[in-house]
Image 1 (cartoon, rainbow, N blue to C red):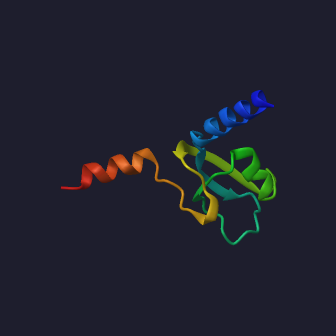
Image 2 (image 1 turned 120 degrees about the vertical axis):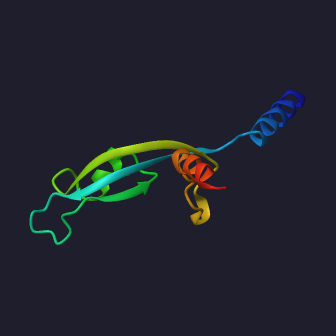
Length: 98
């Protein structure tokens, strides 16, 4: 019994130091439907990987995806938190500020 309590205490201490992380993907998405009103490619930022994003939005017959960049963000996206900016955006803002 004492050994089990010590084990549970150890596991609970480990869980306090856990950190979350997620990956962000940026794509150019273009409709594959020749009758679509929107034939221009547009930029999308998502936490879905390329295969999942394409499958979720109708598959390869529906949309074409070109991966632009990807980066990792600390934390999570629960409760509709905004996605962290890309390191490139952060660097560009730093260079443009006086």
